[in-house]
Length: 329
Image (cartoon, rainbow, N blue to C red; front, top):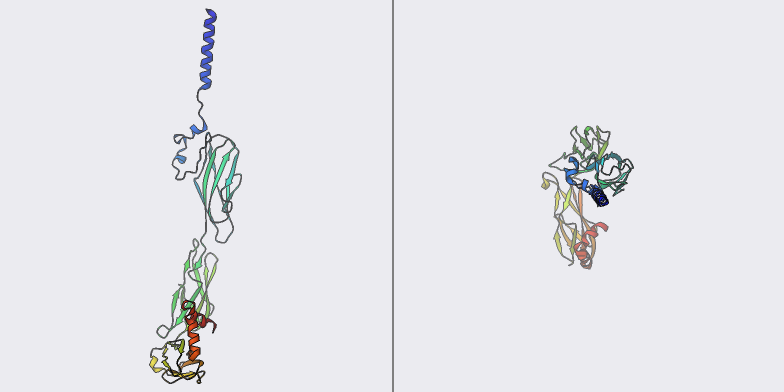
């Protein structure tokens, strides 16, 4: 009887011990429930934390890291700090999902190489995982709104103007000095307003507070007195056929400007004082209208069978034949 009690007592003790040993132990997975996360991790806008099986998490001092490459070129660096490792292992391995954009060393220091994004992952020996999004952008580099300016001097606009200014300016940058390489062609004022004066080329330079020297090439064309014909090419297939060319002179009073008409080949085509062109033989000729302003313009004339052939060529290539003829003739 006494032995039975002892056996029963041992059995109860063993069962109790077995129950104690079999009692569930909190796992890393359970500890990673939302209620056990640090508040910063619970409120994170980005879900870069992974929980696989019994693995835990690594909590960083930031969800994401923004890095900016310097405008002058090169690389930039940042750091991802480890705040908490759930499995308490101290050895962490760092990797980058895109080493072309950013790399990371064994201490969490990130080096940015090019624009883009990468996920930096940290894994502990015990299997805890943490991730941080790295976004790399390029610092703005000061530049002018254009590198080339074309200004046309017209009789009704003898001093054309255009505005230069900084765009994509670097922080705290601005132009403190403007200057022109040829003030007789184009000038620039303290506000970057460029004024064309006469035909030619000038370079406008802008010196900035950040040590940049920016430039813009200005080409000024003088259109005052320019002669423009209504046609650049004529096709007179019938010998004896006629057509009229008209000349426009870019001045305030075009009627006051005298025009002289000439033909490069009067045996093929003639032109009278009123710009009437007549086909007198087969071939090619150039009709030129010269104004008393010293400017002129010309028109190619094709007659007879030559006109038929050239017109067919001009109509080919879906109507682009004439364009190519202007380029290569």
